[in-house]
Image (cartoon, rainbow, N blue to C red):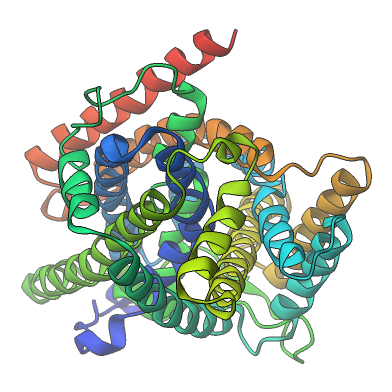
Amino acid sequence: MSKENLHPFPAPLPFKKLIGPSFVILALGLGSGEVILWPYLVSNYGLGIAWGALLGITFQYFINMEIERYALVKGESVFVGIHKFWRLAPIWFIVSTFAGFGLPGIIAASAKVFASIFGITNFVWVAIGFLLLIGLILSCGKTVYGLMEKLTKTIILIGVPFIFLLAIILSHSVDWLALAQGLVGHGEGYTFLPVGIALATFLGAFAYSGAGGNLNLTQSIYIKEKGYGMGKYAQKIAGLFKSGHQQEIKLTGENFEMNATAEKNFKAWWKKVSLEHALVFWFIGALSISLLMLLSFSTVFGNPENVQGINFVINEGAAIGKILGSSIGVIFLVVISIMLFQTQLGVMDSTSRIMAENAALMIMKRKKTEKIGLGKIYYSFLWTQIAFGIILFLCGLSEPKTLIILGACLNAVAMFVHIGLVSILNRRELPKIFQPKLWRKILLGIIFIFFGVFSVVVLVDQL
């Protein structure tokens, strides 16, 4: 390749300008694992299972970093790379993404919590209204990524400190001790897993310790749009109602000249993005899960009504209201509802990106073109998902916990597949100097086997 077609590998940005993509990917898990599944399990089985949440988000940290690695070097998403060696990959990613996240459990949970504040018994119409609102929000931004980053930063930086204060005020020293013991697998009368726990629910929570499913793969799209590494030369999706929304976008990345400067800049990028993801995704994520589990344990552990769907969240609001005043209990429920809403918004954005990019890859191959109007495809998938969710609600499929757990189990299988694919991708496509070190390869192999074995165990258990 001639040097005329090469771009310089960019030097890293200042650290504070890097912060953003990890907030988006973290927010994708707040409404499923952090707010719902782990606190639900704790409300029924105690804090002895907290180790699973910590291990799950630690696994996802390393999974996400390998996804980032490819996008940093190539300036394109992992979907583009995987399509190069598996031509059926786009079909798999579209089907597995829609199957895992088309079920609107998160927004159903948001609507149910919100409806409980006003005494509305039929929350389905609230959920439908929320879905339509999500569609409008994502359609009106100047660029979709910029809008998502602003929303997620705001909600996380308000919601997490509020939860932290509640946990500090309402918990006791014995609760913190129980959390510390639970992080190493010691529960009340059990070690690691209590008798009677539903493996499907536990695996779902484990898979959702962070983003989960194919959502992890959108990290490569988000850091590309943020301009990390070779993503500096990538284009962004404009809002539906902006004049430029029909612009054609090139999905493949740009190439760079292999030299000492490129290697030096990559290593500098890698250190900074590793730290950014560790601080935002892993630390804030682990802290959020731990505090929400602690709050659940301190307020509603042992309440027999907890087993009914997501009633434990509403019970938490009532318990907080009795101790700190009804207004604080209501504020708690509002914050939880907003966090769940924001998660569903983020999920809709990410899944639409995944399916749009994979559909675009198939269309581009058929038409033999390098550019495509990605915005129109993105919004087609977005509004298709919204329509599908509304149809499910109108057909009576609206129980939040059931929808979330089913989706989570499907996404655990999807994670097993994409961990293997990304590992193959980085080995095949990246120059040796940019590939992960041996210990990372071994760790990813262990994580791959873990999700494979766990998925088979849950499948057998359900059958």
